[in-house]
Image (cartoon, rainbow, N blue to C red):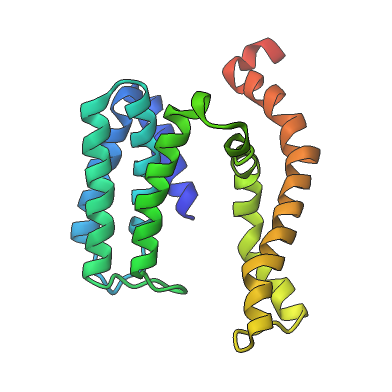
Length: 202
């Protein structure tokens, strides 16, 4: 639901010829929704700072510095608003660690994009995380919960916590890599060509 809202919004703005104003419009809509929605009502508003931060980093790298800085300020401010006013979530409550993840993640993405060419080769291996990030994102929660329940892994013992922190993430990363190799990689280029020029396929 969250991604669907974001993608539909982007599609509508691009269809209306507002692609170059997409970040500014997304910021405006997110601020409006945040300020006009009850903190007791579950929404997707609190996830939009992550989308805004990513788009802001892209704008910064492309030289749109003013727009990028404004976007990052909006993303961080909306995140702090949700933290300050205890905005409700249906499953996992919003806590400080999530804000830290947004800030550190935004910084890491910027550094990776800006300084990729001068990083030591060992650091470039971390690009593997980017390659598997979307399939990992799609499967980690549901598949992870099914595995934990099947294996009767709780939260009480040190062994349980080690499985949750290391064994399960490594296993899910392996599955995500297989999805990337077998499904995503073979289809992404032809799909991109089709979306770029559908008429050429007719």
